[in-house]
Amino acid sequence: MLDRALLRNETDRVRLAAENKGEPCPIDEWLELDERRRRLLGETEELRRRRNELSNEVSSLKKDMDGDQAKLIYNLSRESKETGRRLAAIEKDLKAAETRMSDIELYFPNIPDPDVPVGNDESFNRIVKSAGEKPSFDFNPLPHWELLGELLDSEASGSITGSNFILLRGWAAWLQRILISWMMDFNSNAGMEEVWVPFIANRKSMTSTGQIPKLEYDMYHIEKDDLFLIPTGEVPLTNIYSDSILQDKDLPIRLFGYSPCFRREAGSYGKDTRGLNRVHQFEKVEMVRMVKPENSEVALEEMTAHVGEMLELLNLPYRVSLLATGDLSFAASKCYDFEVWSAGQEKWLEVSSVSNFRGFQSRRGGIRYRPAAGGKLQYVHTLNGSGLALPRLMAALIENGQTESGRIVLPEILAERTGIEILG
Image (cartoon, rainbow, N blue to C red; front, top):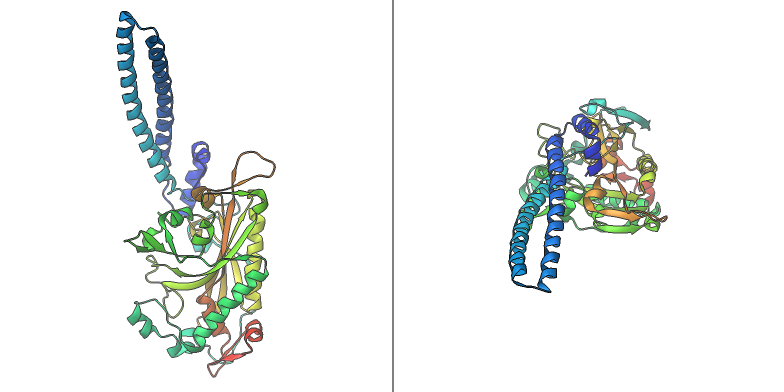
């Protein structure tokens, strides 16, 4: 959510941000409501002042009342009641204007940072780093769905749930479990606090992190309870501190947690959905940070370096893209995407996004801190990133580690951890 002072005083900046993100911008309606609200506030203050004056006059006259004063008291009392009725009507209008303004504010996207490339789609993204060498083979490498065969049991998952859900068996299920365990330990050893979170969130939590209202149609909704299956661990991790006042000494907060993620992917029809590429449920280890505003850019670079280190340990070639405005999420001010090379499919697969939201989420969620030097409360800056997301990570590891016989050579970091070097 954007600051009201920014909406009021930097209207052109708000319009440009929405245009560059391809989002609607109901700023004109908001400005009209804001003007009306301030006018109504002035009227309510004047009416309250007049009502208090009348009340004081009536009280004073009643102390020493005679016939003439009785009539005056009657007239003043009638005026006081009429003032109260007018005040109640204006307060009702004021509440309606406030409610509508708050509703509209949920539709203004976050403003991209100045260094974010301007462009309306992913073709404008800027690659800022490439690392690792693509594997070479003296045979034609296969895609992961052929290498997995019956271990990727789409028939069973389809009969249990439906299309685009996955069921892994045997060593494929084992590999996913080992990867999750390794990522959890890696993040813990980096000094982050491990959290086990609920996998269902309420509407308020989903609104705080920016999934609602824009992406509500993509969410799995439990109508009876008005709850949502979480689309990312970012939702529960960030909302741990919803409506909280933190102390200066509490920052930075560095959290991570495992979660399944559920997304209807309503806008993804026609995209590649084979194998593990695009599914409605996937597993992820998520990282969340809360920092002072002046430290959020450094925190973003630290989290980006952390993800890169993980991919290097897994011996996966990767590239990092700074997302352009049109590819940037609704709530983010800046985002780096990580893609790993998939040898069997010969394309790049996204496995992580690391984003800075600045004060956008904390303003929605009411997450503030008290500066050590005193002064007014400030909103923290929130950041999050996948560390890492499955199952495309699985797809790349399987395809890049394949042998001609169809077996899979594990990267050294996993072989050392498990004592197993080859799967299949």
